[in-house]
Image (cartoon, rainbow, N blue to C red; front, side):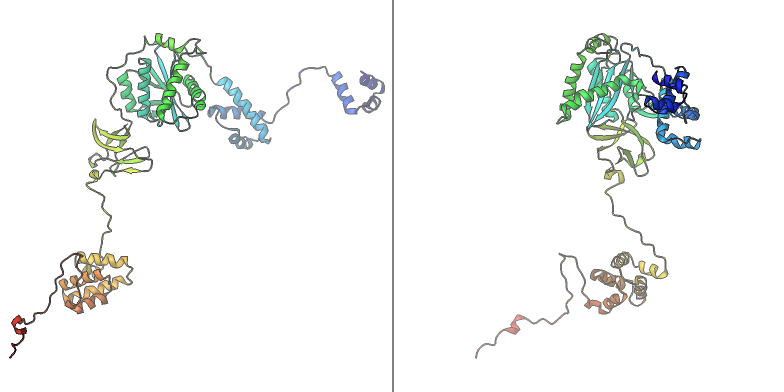
Length: 475
């Protein structure tokens, strides 16, 4: 009031400020506030207002997964000149508005005996298999070291045994071990999973891709098992100890009231088991884990490793199944090969699939010039001589072979072959060496294998009787 009275009397911002002991800016702000009645301040324009449609289209087309970092170059090309921090705030507001309009959530009213939801989780070296009956909220948790099809179906069969029946539908994530492919967003179950479902009498179903909301009932169980079972335990020595702890934990949580249904899952299971389908009298046969096509090397790939099969199955599709640490390869229901499981990148080959043990590869000798043809026509000893001479690094080998081939006219093939055999034994690969052996003739020793009987061709000499060496009788 003093500032306003001073301004009314003096009529100047600075004079009123000097009289009241403040600044002229404060006086002006107070006077303008009195002249303008208080009300809602109009929104100030933002530098991102022109990008609202661009942001909305990009966020909608990417299902809200695109980041502000990738949107910034697009916005700058569209004329945005503001800071990256202000742009990140605008993108966050646009995403929040899109999420509110994206979909309408409605609680799922599960029917008794209708759905069993399954999923895998990973905590350290252990893989956690979780299953929940949607109506009774009965929980099943087990541990494993692999997340392949055989392990999943084995644990699913154990779950059916524990709940005492089979639900109408088993809802799973789009896990690679259970799906054979996706066509137009429709999941094609793997052949082994189809055979397993037909044996137990349930319908396999899969969730939407990248949609965790559609299986939140089991996602919550995975997180609950990790935080309440795995983390407090600090690990187990063996897999059997881990599964025994999982059984005790499931018995504990299934005996407590569930916060969502306000009932005890174990008691509700007794009611739900009356509408579950009966278990089959026979357990399923070994289901194929995968189907592979035999390649031209007579192998199939499984787990980033190669396994051999008989050659008559090249180009055909065979079924692979894992049983007791072995890979069983079958065709039309008949086992054709069996291998121990090997690590990624390794190879398991059976010699009978290739007609015998592996042979050392040998480079074929293909003579081209007339001298080479003449030398190689001497037979296997000439080929052995050529390979040994090349391996020893003999200089001007072509000229040496041509000189040896010219000696055939003077000595004949049989003599030349014998001389080459001796030269090969002595590791002498020059034409002069072969010529020296030929000139020595019988005088050059022959190399015999170790342990062979030594036979020498000695010259014949006259033989005298021993009586000729007797002493004359003394006279």
